[in-house]
Every structure is written in structure tokens, then in C-alpha cells.
Image (tube, rainbow, N blue to C red; front, side, top):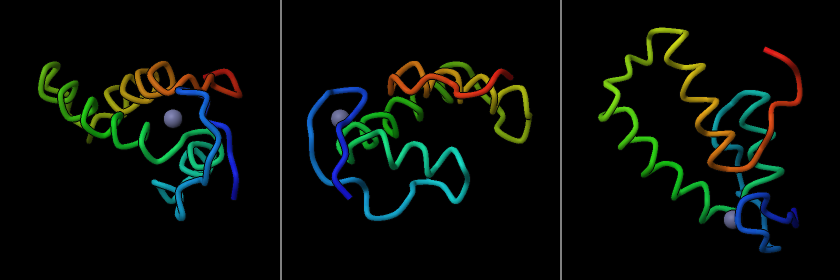
Length: 80
Ligand SMILES: [Zn+2]
């Protein structure tokens, strides 16, 4: 599936699989190139460590999703 990445603007192939088995994962697959997703993965680990995010906590997961959307330039499609 050809896509244009919302973060780096390059055109290329989408990730072969959505990175998460959710609607958000499908949205990321349609909008973000594999290289930028990898970069987010590394950034995410740093954020989780820096802010000591407990991902069992729904608020922490929401905060991380906001960071992810900002990082990848994928705005929320519906209000939270
Ligand atoms: Zn990209």
C-alpha cells in the first residue's frame, strides 16, 4: 500500500502490518512510514523512562498517545 508519510513527507510503502491491532494502529499504518514509526518506538521508550509512565494507567496511555500523535503529525480524528 503506497502512502505519504505525515511526519517526514516521503512517499513509499506502508508498514506491512498495522503496528497495533487497533483502529489507531490502522490509522498509523495509513499515515506513517516504517522509518518514522521506528523512530517513535525509540522516542517512546525514552519518554516512558523519563516520565516513569505506568502503561497500566489509562491516563498515562492517553498522555503517551497524545505525544505519539504530535510526534508523528497524526492529529486526533475525534475529540477525546
Ligand atoms: Zn516518515
